[in-house]
Length: 59
Image 1: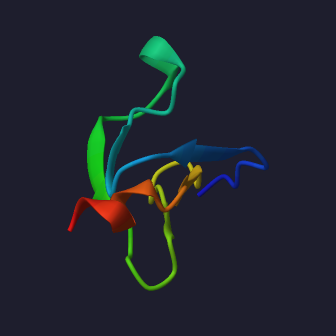
Image 2: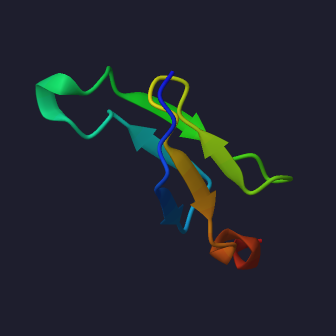
């Protein structure tokens, strides 16, 4: 698994990752951000997605 140095900030608790490389990417996977840690890493490419916490006010 490759590690990405870039962090993607998102507003929700779910994301989709396809590696961003078109045909050079990987199969699209849907990932759930862990509420405790506030982030999730793609198992294919290592891209880290971090929630900005705005979902906290959606209760």
